[in-house]
Amino acid sequence: GTGRKTLFVAPPLMPDIAVLEPALTAGLPPHLTAATGIDAFTHCLESYFAPIYNPMCDGIALEGMRLCLAHLATAVSDGGNLEARASMQIAASMGAVAFQKDLGMVHSLAHPLSAKYDTHHGLANALMLPASMIFLEPKKMNEEQQRRVRNVRDLFSEAKLKSSSLGIEIHSWLEKLGIEFGLKNHGISQEDVPFLADEAFADTCHATNLMPVTREDLAAVYTAAL
Image 1: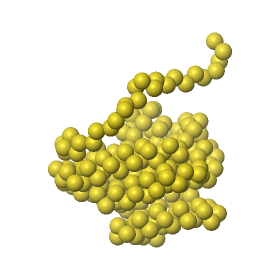
Image 2: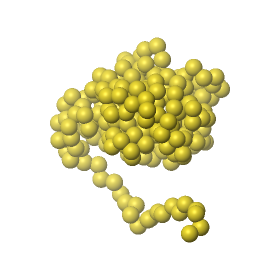
Image 3: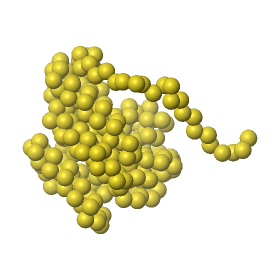
Image 4: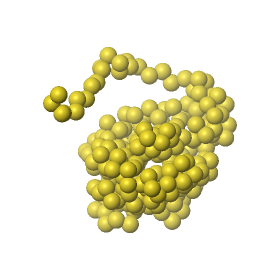
C-alpha cells in the first residue's frame, strides 16, 4: 500500500555449481543455438563496454567473445560437434560472470520485445545488437571508450570477420548465423515504437551503457532496426 516497488530475491535458489555437459545441448535446433549463442556474446560485449571498473570481468568478457566468434558458427551448422558446444557453454558461463558489471542498451531494447511481443530473448538481442552499435560508433567517445571498441574489433579481425565498422561486422556475422533481421519480420511495426521506447527507457540496463542514452535515442534505434 506504500506505492513503492519491492524487489524479491531468493538466495536459496542460486545454484552452488553449474555442470556444463555439451552432449545435453547437441539436439538444440540451429536457430536456438544461434540465438542463445548471440545472447552469450551480447552479455560479454555489453559487460566489457559497461563503464564500471572490474578488470577481471573485462578479461573474462573478452575471452568469452573470442570463444563465441571462434565456435558459434560450428555449433549452429554442426550441432553434434561437442567441442564447439562445450566452448559455447563456457562462453555463456563467462558472460554470466562478466555481467556482474551490468549490461547496456541492447538488453534494455531487447527486454520489451520478449516481455510484450514473445520474441526469444537471444533473438531479440540479435535484432537490436547491430543497430545499437551502428548508433553508438559515430558518437564522440573518450580514449577509453575508443580503446574498448578497438579491442572488440580486433577480435573480429582475428576471426577473419573484419569489415568497415563494428556494427557492420556484427550484422554480417549474425546474418551468416541465420538471423533474419528487420523487426517488421517479427511482428513489430513503427506503431509499436513509442511503447517499446517507453519500456526500454524504464529498463535499468542502459544505465551502464557505453555512454548515456535517452528515450529518443532508444526509439531511433528501434526505428533503424525495423
